Image (cartoon, rainbow, N blue to C red; front, side, top):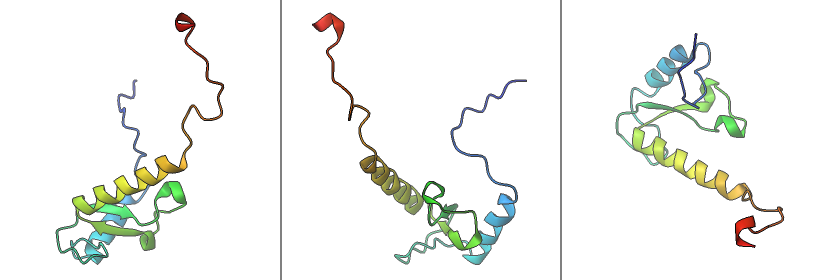
Length: 100
């Protein structure tokens, strides 16, 4: 048997469907972004993302519209890229043998 799932996204934790339903019900289906957005929420967001020590606890989850969720994810990704040194940093730079 082969696993053809090539997604790098982590699998949902046990009980995720129930947690997701609770977040949606608590928000009455409306985006919970702090700017007062009133669009329909579709994405359950980890306020503190898992990579930074966030959990699947209900207190760390909120409902966001797709636009706000994508925007937050892009901002988190940009910050992570800035915090990570380039792959070439600290390496001895050598020229390609064909260019020497």
